[in-house]
Length: 140
Image (tube, rainbow, N blue to C red):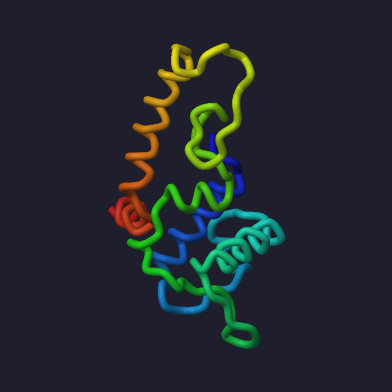
């Protein structure tokens, strides 16, 4: 399940893409437009800035702006940046693997096998969709 923080990050990126892909947009404008708490959004946008997705400008006319084109920002990358693991179980995670400690042999574990399939299908969908794709769907 996506955290609220991740949902807000995706909504903010779509907003920046739709409204102001090349312009600075204030935290207040995004927060008000998307009903996101201002302080929470500030933390989210800073995370996206630190990851090289957004840039910022201080002062009058300042705010946040897109550094990467929306079609270069894969949904999987936003989720991993904000929430970490995508897999539903730690024992099937590619980037955040941990043994679940519940089975004797992961290779023979039917739960592990099923959730690897879920992970692979999820990764395929999230890797093949971008913020740009979501913005285009949102516009139509």
